[in-house]
Image 1 (cartoon, one colour):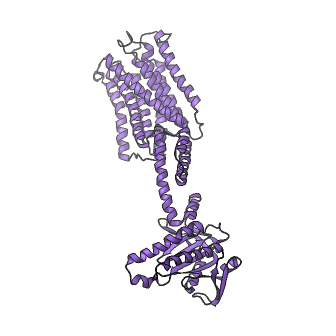
Image 2 (cartoon, rainbow, N blue to C red):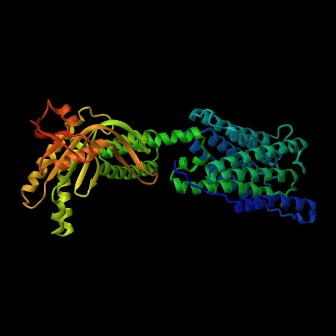
Image 3 (cartoon, one colour):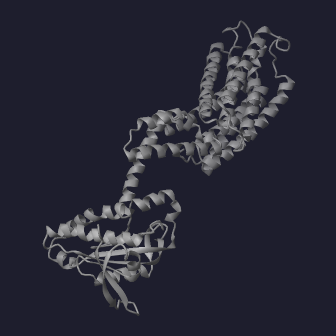
Length: 542
């Protein structure tokens, strides 16, 4: 899942705290000065306001439940149950509006709101306690729990209409003592849940956990207002507004996240447990690998899409992953072009290979440059020199990399440095280097035959120990070979005539039974105290 930062700065946090404190200040003022607690009784406005808010919240709870169903995330599912409970009992409260559906007030429907808020507080607190060790919630369990909520609502509605004992009395002017005590417990549960979700917000920096924390605070204040409110007065309307605001905050946050992510499941990712997020990342990674492999091999994508739909990915998510796979393929093609298929594939399989530092390995180093390229370039436009080099490189580099397995360490002007056995997986690296050098001379020789004035390559090869790895800094590094083996290869190259390949004694010992080689005697090389035997590759055979 993509991470998005919704940072709550210090100033914004203070402003939010002030805004959240205003409802309690207003309630205290209305209770302290009863003359301000004005009365407004309008049954249709109450009915449609409460019913509309409840329906919106039921839809929000269903969307949250859908996200939980897709991921099996227990925390998200618990939040959906809290929303369904508070919204469902609020909808029953709407039925208590006199003169709309019922002739007069009904005690059960009047008490539905505090009962719903109390039950929702318990579920909200439970959702805040769920962590990565909590088991996932399967579809069957989710369906049963949702069915239990709707069954509870139906039972409460039936009991209220039947006016069973305790619900057969006229609606009380004040909240019963038992419900007042339970309301205090509900406020504490909401406060606990809000603190935990604020901690989740600080960890994730996603807007949805913050919105849920704010909603719990607003519902706690609504519970306080329910206890002290006078019917049809401002204190009574206040808790209606607080509940509407709580549901609206979550709705707006979920809508914002949906626009970012493009899916319902993605919209609620800010609430998911760490384990759920890890599973989502693994699923996305596997899907991305499948799409990338299909694109690289040229296979049709529809079978892959069909399997991803079976795995539960939405069409929007699959389309987004396809775009990512196409971008990765483009980057991969560029990487292969710069470092070669062998190293690029190994970097993908072993990312630690990109760390600074190196490891000792026996390598064969091929060094080649063009004899007379400087004088050639001085008498011609720069574009012609570039054309010469690119023509040569286009003819030989693909084979160097793909056919012989060489790693092009660098292009040095008119020269090239190629390393064999960089990853320690080419036991025949000396033979590979010699055959590769022979191929370079044959391929560029055919090109030079059509251009009388084009210079030819001379090549030197040496085999020995070296340190292969990354040098540089964190921001810029090179994968290279360090050691005298590479320097000596350059000395052999300087001795060679155009069109020829020279090798040292270590290389000769490894290829003497496979190639035709001509001894050239011992030579004093720059930087070497003792003379070194030099050999020329005469033929590589069939």
